Length: 575
Image (cartoon, rainbow, N blue to C red; front, side):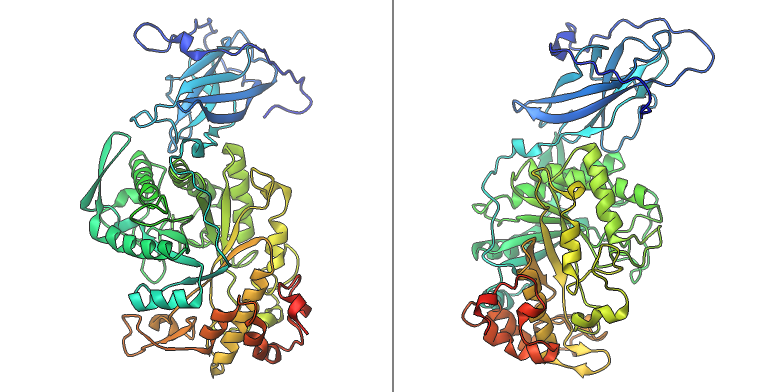
């Protein structure tokens, strides 16, 4: 970057350069004349910097890149008199050995380029990023920020408004006919569907993207179709969590050098967009999913929210190998942008999220675990520099520990404070998260607070120290939902889960609204509803909500919900 005490010179000329005028008769870009450069000796570094301020699709078939210059022009005896535009694929990081620039202007002209989009071809530039460089007679040196296309949604075929839910109540549903019907009875408006990204490639469904052929697993997709379609038909807002488990048959989906880790140490893996094959595969699968679940009129159903990976601040859920947080975010953002571009260029108003656990400033080791707060900050910085995106945060505010349900006394652990330095942020101090997300550097492109969903939390009905206590679980769910429902920056509260899972239940994590059959440890078989089921059913019913949760006040030790919940939604009905 140019030092502040240097003379700053901004060169802006009103006339725009039309790049296509530089195309010769055989369609190749005509090169500007190259000035002589002295041989030998060390060459001074460039002294100009090109700020790319916008990179956007215009007219449906062109990319317009505009900006302004800062600094003084580089030594004319070393560098020629031109600025060059280079296209980088998502997996490319520098210009080493490159000479195939896609545009050029004379220094002093307006910093403005217009190039073909090439949509639908192998030369598709929708996913590319662009940099400006100077030439010293031997090599091209980057002198700008990198910039991605920031408005892929302008190409979207599906433009219907985002599907707004009636309430914030959500649930991870057990996918059987009876339990789907049970969710309808509960009045759930948000549902989670896990999509196993690593098993999508297969046979039975042929697909062509950017001129290349792909085949997808018909059996898997038909199972997903059935679930998503049923939820969509019942006016539920469907959130898909894209999970990349291990598959020996798809090595291109995993970050280079990553090998399979022990199953009890790593559950899912990071997405690989740092190689050509990985990028192209992710791009094709993401596009396929976006098209398949694109509309309420689709025979396959509609997905409205997409969460890319799970709890990315802990590599146990998003493994890419030990690395510092800056490299980790660079690689995650590289893949996230591919999903973002594929989905938003198909479905204009879909929302994309990354998720973290509740370790806001806690348990980081700098190589495989990172603070959630640092992940949010680094991701915002990275995406802001490379081209703004409308990303959102999917947060998981469990109680401390997971084996005890009463989060309201979690401040006694020493891990809960009420400022942004808090080690943990959960439902005890949720306002720390939403206050922090109001910081100017984290706001969305529209200047508003980004969308936040609580996409996973649960409260056990079996305390690790006190045994079964259904009333305690029900009280925790009531309190937690009221906290989220009364916070205007929270869009959804999605419980994990509808039915206890035997493996979790064995560890005192009975999060379900139903008990499960512990005699069938390899399956999830519901047996009986818990008290929490009726509480969750009535929690958003104006006539019944306070009556349904009255029992919880004595358990929590309060007289009124409004005494402990800011802006309590049902305050006017309290006696």
